[in-house]
Image 1 (cartoon, rainbow, N blue to C red):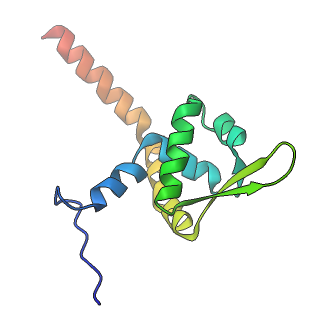
Image 2 (image 1 turned 180 degrees about the vertical axis):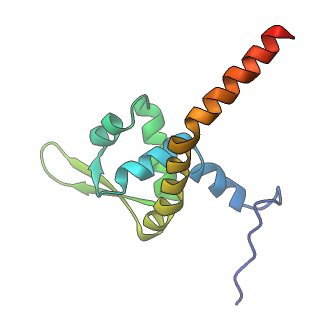
Length: 124
């Protein structure tokens, strides 16, 4: 049996849902946080400044559903839950890290463009 051809440019293709998930700000930051190894929920929350507990839980559930993150529960008191990247999640980290580096490198240029556009709008 041949693999289907996934085309995110086609609005009916299910690959668009995956593209939405992996390109979200919170997913990118969670995947980056887990790149160095497993972490607990509160460790991820501390590393990803500004994410609400609800959004972090939702993001982790979605990434787990897509097979990018594993959730391991260890029976102890209190219960320990660790999140880690799967092999697929690890392969996704590299292109997302490149995107993160691009943002770090070009943010000053983007800010300058914003200021220039704002100045042009004020004088128009």
